[in-house]
Image 1 (spheres, rainbow, N blue to C red):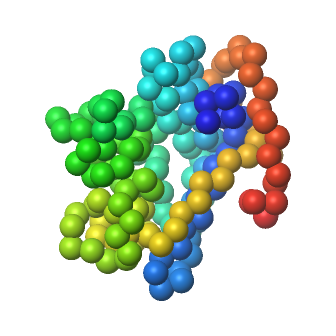
Image 2: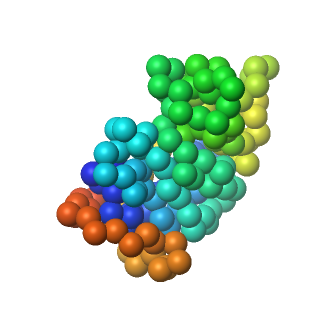
Length: 165
């Protein structure tokens, strides 16, 4: 993902479906993993997102700037390892407003925030039926106030635009 988005000229669309066949989406006009990183593995594959639009509400912007946390690599700001506690790796802060790598709990559940979660759409006790994260090169340049000044040798890969249409 770093090599695909590291230039900062990518966008992200997340499509979600619940168990009642309801759908929602979230678009981010700026998406990158390891945007300002020389060594993304050492730097933790930090998430950068901005310019939200969509019907699901924004449950990812709070995670922007965070490193990717796994059960064996705790990089969040919590006293506990959020990936271990919530049963899935993600760009946790303290801990999350979304976690698309949580447990597949088939809709409503009694446990708290440990399913496939997008809290601004379905709350903390509902695990989504499906989610898809789709990345493509940006159609238009990111506003200068949001785009870092990078001298990168990486060129963005070209993905089919049909997944966004």
